[in-house]
Length: 221
Length: 221
DNA sequence: GGCCGCCTCCCCCGTGCGGGGGAAGCTGGG
DNA sequence: CCCAGCTTCCCCCGCACGGGGGAGGCGGCC
Image (cartoon, rainbow over the protein chains, first blue to last red):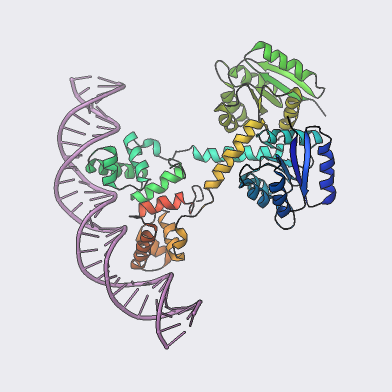
């Protein structure tokens, strides 16, 4: 098994050199390049094709986020491990968005860094504990809104809910009738009773409550 | 500084005993109780008030998820670290939802376990690398859909966009006219041209594209 | 100057929509 | 057994909605 090929990206020369030396102490690691900004990073990675890129965020010119985004859009991209001083950065979410596999703080121990490199090289992911905590909290928050189809929606019968869902797809009454294989008159009564139960005026407002209540979720179609 | 108080929950006696012995090797840990199912776990935690609970998921009777949910609803709850054999479990999301601070696989090393306990005791969070990877991917996916107010929406004039946004609040034409302080006829022409540009039939469909495109976001009101 | 895009308002006209009734069959529970 | 709730369908009616087409004022751009 060959060594994990690593590129180090940091605008501070000392820091970069320190990481190179540190990583070189591990027999299964091979530092194959380094860069001081985003442009250099992209160029060197495309030439060296490393397994893992240790990426700083704050850099003059192209920052680590944008560099990550570009690298990840290549075919067979490297795994990117973000290494930064500040965890309170908004950049965390942007970095994960850009496709980073890991997010470590510079106060991590050498052992943690080695672990992290091996984990992302294996295609897994690892985040600093504080970052994990925020991500988990954020994730739970996102899920909470997405599973409270509550309002007065439980008052609806199954058929009424079904009709509401189709209205929220933008269908007209005749279209809904066709979809459900019933008469249009039937649909109209379902719609009327649904609107009355929810205290709404028209189908437009019905679409709004369907989305706001979480009955339907953007992107699920 | 006092030791971290730990409760071990697992339905298999040997496993439970093994973890107790393992944790006892650390001078800053103190195992203050153990349980073989969810009910016992809740009872013992309320009596012992540990800092950290090592929780198995699969157990007879009340499972680890439900036990976690109940513990977390208490005042000053312990931190819960889930320890399970299967990472492919759907339970991961449920566990995080229930409020767990960590999620480890049983194939983790002793050192990783100790680290994890110390991290969650400190109020941070830690997940197994495979779980982290899935969470990061899921998180990125969630965010992607939330920032693409693109479609053909740029073709709309500012006024048309404004009208679309109000339609997506469930307002009728007269209401929109009042809100914008213009005549109803004016609103009608904006609506008509907006629908034509987007290739839509009625305001109901307009609400759908407003939500699906990200022009409006559920919960922002 | 002339042109064009946007916002504003006006007309007519057809119809999809929603309210107000009523009625049938079917299910399940007291 | 009968009643209640759900689903299905029917009638009539009024109106908000949306299409078509036209027009004036105002700003920017060539």
